[in-house]
Length: 89
Ligand SMILES: [Zn+2]
Image 1 (cartoon, protein in one colour):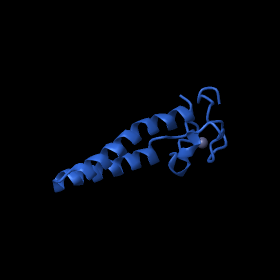
Image 2: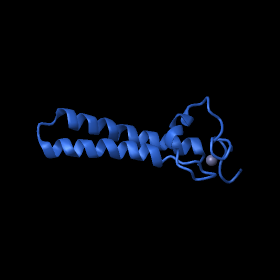
Image 3: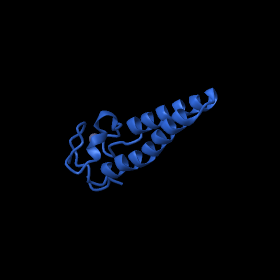
Image 4: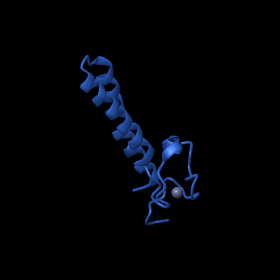
């Protein structure tokens, strides 16, 4: 797996959870269901922040989630290519 694939996988998991959390929070009249929506929302945000990692230095994506975009080629932490497999680097 490349770093870019790791970031994209974290994105794919996090966004539906965030959107579901917002929907549950906004559409519910029950306090406990609204609280569940808040928990889902923050779980998605935290997942997006910490789950996607550089496969070389294992630093969490955090603020550089945008690195999954094709314009960014290298990990800002270790400088290795986001498209290089761990075995090849
Ligand atoms: Zn790195």
